[in-house]
Image (cartoon, rainbow, N blue to C red; front, side, top):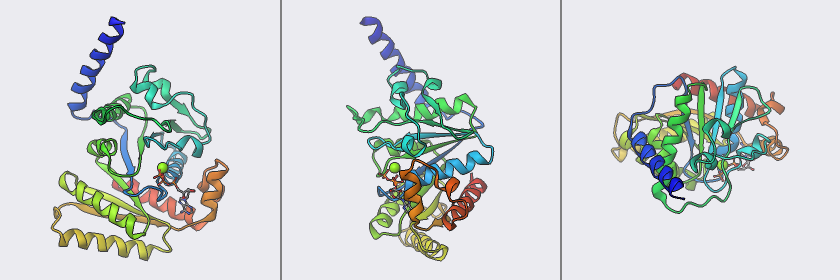
Length: 273
Ligand SMILES: Nc1ncnc2c1ncn2[C@@H]1O[C@H](COP(=O)(O)OP(=O)(O)OP(=O)(O)O)[C@@H](O)[C@H]1O
Ligand SMILES: [Mg+2]
């Protein structure tokens, strides 16, 4: 019992000190995908985005960091018996919680639905998890799907990320939330990539993106902070259809406009990270 307690204490000390270090220099690029509002299509976007990257021959690891509503395993059609919490709790090594998907070059660290934390002060553990993945120096890109909102866990991921992509719909409430995200990031980040989902055409996305930039200027947010419009994805019934069948939309419906848009978005992001 004492041994267990000691090792947990040691682990905590180790975690705390490492979390304060600078992030490791690694070949693995970190991209955090977030939104303000929930349900805007973040996880669906992340799954398709990750798949496109993997098809380009990049080694991709997706971390499902949606605390409470993890669903990346459903989108990738895997049934993991281990989740990131087995690593966080010290039951498994990092490599043991990385599961292969049926898609080449595409791996997943699954989240756990309904996971409850005792205390939000544990959120720093996530920056340590990211650090450990970067230290593996194996993947070309680590994509983190954060949960919705701006809770402590999401903030922790944002803190360690230089490449942040926000996805939003054009609903007023989603735009209000994304603006709150912009306000927060402008304090100590350099830029944000912005992508619209359920958007009829690029012009709408670009126009709204410019409006957000103007609003930021008007409210005197830090002038060096850059909001980069990355692209728009239209609504498509086949996106939902593919997800229900546990298939990847861009793989099943390659010729659809939304699939082309997603491909273009990946190319734009690759130029920016
Ligand atoms: N462009 C689209 N066209 C049609 N349906 C879409 C599109 N994008 C996402 N969806 C559907 O919208 C629903 C919500 O998507 P998803 O779960 O990816 O959102 P989310 O932002 O990750 O939600 P949460 O905040 O709960 O994590 C799903 O049923 C998905 O299939
Ligand atoms: Mg989600």
